[in-house]
Length: 341
Image 1 (cartoon, helix red, strand yellow):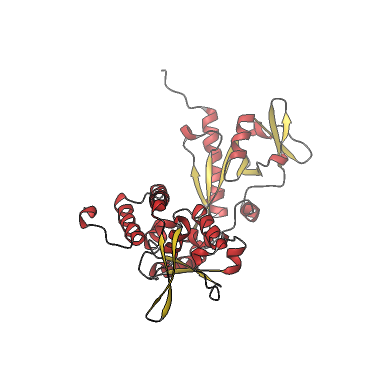
Image 2 (spheres, one colour):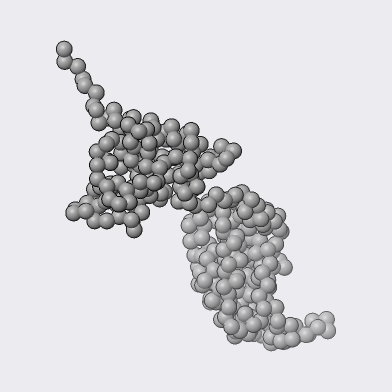
């Protein structure tokens, strides 16, 4: 009678995997995951490392398992010689987790191993070879050595606690104020300010919570009679940060007492100086923004807003909300209600 015949090679492979599975689970006390044959491109199984308390760590090792006496036929002074094809070597070395080669002696019920380490390989004609040491048995004694090949276990949640607390504090603030000193203005330094704004962009929740909350205060010019927007170095510095801080228009505060957006407006648009006058005994200066520069400035600031909202998947509705707030602040008047609809 003709019937399908079981493959001796396939049976031997399964026997080897069974032996390896037993070592992994009973001696190393880790998790064994067999790779499905249709996904086997040279990796037969994976080991998932666990802690002494059986917590799964997220660390894994890939296994190439070879079973049978033929793999113990060639040896040198140090161990058995394992040969393989170049495409498998490239595959193993490009793996993002370590790959170990296991030779299973099914007669002695023993397994020997080595790490697929590029520096341990040798060219073998058009292929490659590596030595699996005689004394490197795959059992409980190999556990500490195998653990060296995975990255250290880190308690990321504990490390993130300060970061999360910081985020929550930033979300709770009504205003986020950055202080810039005169020396930074003179030296055209704005790196720390960029880092501060970038800190508000780390995730969507913080971006949303920081909308319209930022003001920037320039200190060190109290004894200077000029307004900040009349000082050349301030004008240059403001122009630099407006060019280098992406999304500034999204974060800047637009309430009456918020200063920096107004400074940007005067620095970027220029102004007409009508000189000093006395109001109730107080000397004041009358200036008006140069009207011809108004539209180019609006285009510049709204372009910044549009690029930022689009790149961060912020809705059109929020973009529109910020646009009207910026326009009202810059024009110093309420826009008609029908524009909001």
